[in-house]
Image (cartoon, rainbow, N blue to C red):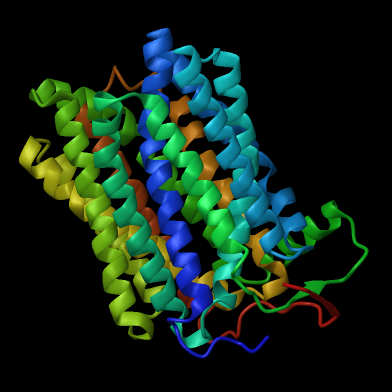
Length: 413
């Protein structure tokens, strides 16, 4: 097939519509599943177990990325969305039919959905460069981030209403429909053939090849560190904010407004990146994102009162998106197509492990230390990350990026 000539081509539009629909469903279900478990068990610990099971498969993501790089990207994408859709329809349907769903069914579905996600996530990031012209990659990522975050915001706001008006089961069913709709749209998306690194190598060998490629670039070597640190910094904030909102007298409603504003900030950053396109160099955008996130955490430390926290939530969301989206574009530009799945899988694994490991580390101390101290620690972590990123970029300035083996074969798409 011919490479895309414009940003707004049929394949990208189908992708954007499907991605937005599944994001809306996922936002609805994120609230619904929590309330489903909470209503059935009355235990926040049980909710944490379900979340942990959904994240557990992410340790396998580097191996999933190696498998993704072997096949037509549409195969893991369609299969993962079908699996997630059927799982959500099963849980939602059983909830409607029985009133309660055995916890082992909910947890089993969460585990299998997480396993499907470890294939879908690197495949999705690897597919985007084939959907648009190379010069429009930054705009495409900005649009995807903006639209998806907008639908996530809408889904978060609507999820509470759907759950309280009807039941968690309805929101979970809508999530299942969203995944299946995305899978259906993907059948109409055409992707260009991708080169694949040396045929016949085992999965472990291909994982090692991806890691060797990343080590040849200081920037690529540092990317998993960024993902880990960013999510590790979010962990204590996620734990202490509900408690702080209770102390301030705003409770769950105030926390919901905080999360909505954080999503709104991400939406605004995505829209800005889509407008600027190539005028915002990815390395500069990533550095700016680090600075903005640092300022947001410092603001929470300086003024931990409700109006200031809401303003910082907007700034924090803007900074997170400003950091993540250019970084994704930079990786798509630096990494050869045959290695995209593996490299994004390493990033996904590092990012996913950051929060649970940080939660395990801080949980014994959260109630013993002042709330504001955690905001200061997060600001310090991100400030150090800013300095490290600038140093890494300067050290690699003038290089053409990582070298790869010229021996490739074609993987049909």
